[in-house]
Image 1 (tube, one colour):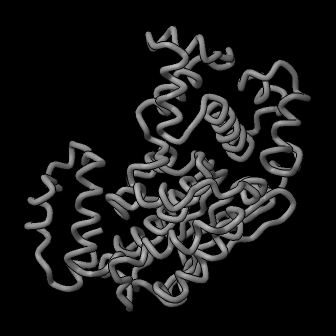
Image 2: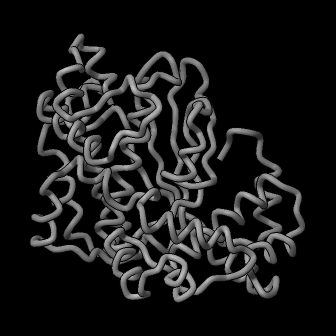
Amino acid sequence: MLAGLTRQNIDPAPHLAATNIDIADTASRIPVESYAALYNRLNHQLDDEGFGLFAQPMRVGSFEFLCRACISAPTLAEALARASRFLHVVLPDLAVSVRRSHGHAELVISETRKLADDTDDPGRVFAFEWLLRLLHGLSCWLAGRGIGLDSVIFPYRKPAHFADYALIFTEDSRFAPTVPGGTGTLVASFNANLLDLPIRRDEAALTAFLDGAPGKITTLYRRDREMVIRVRDLLRAALPETLSLDDIADRLYLSPRTIHRRLEEEGASFRAIKDALRRDMALARLTKTDDPITKVAADLGYADSSAFYRAFVEWTGMAPVHYRRKWADKPPGTS
């Protein structure tokens, strides 16, 4: 986020101090509220919602008009199509598109020009991840629910903190460095049925949403939300036993209604968390191990392989054995 300041020879220290962030303390996480505050502060100080990272500034107000362009769309597919056209005007360095095929959809973010000579340049890495989080968070808000990503391919080398990607994006996060001198492409995959979700927000909801935006987007629909991750951890630790919402409530010493409400506030549901956990683990097991499909199904708590088969086809549009063969046949770093 600070890379654009460095390029413009602007001292970041006053901005960090104003938001109570100490980046020298590498042992501590930065509170998300402080991160969001720094996000908005830099946008307004630079008059650039792109943090000074691109050839053309993305002037303050761009995010608001992106939202306004999308809110009247009938479906998420149309909202993302409008977002793509709008970003083409205000952010020409990155092109956004959506592809759909056989129950599978891909959100594609491509460089139209090299953002940096070094493919692992921090500003370039942040630019890709920022735009993915922005579009993903906006999509979740527009649809009124969390949208699980099946996989993401990032166009740079695996960073030292790669374990965090499973928490923030998806367990199936891969890294494929861009060829030197070329332009890179990020590909985020998800269930194509999600593109047909209706847009559930209106002008009144948008007014509230824009209070604290665009930095606010970093606090919404996060995979590392408190209640979501507590429920997810309990479900994962119990496998192959399948816990009910009542079981979770007992272990957290809360009522099922309280958990339901907290999850709803965080843009999730118990069923969605359980399905996403099984999906992420299944995709990881099928691509990274040689475990028999029957064992994968049993370890994920499915009573029989046929139930796992039906769920897997719903997630990916193909049978487990075909999915495993598809990725086994691909060279490393391809999509």
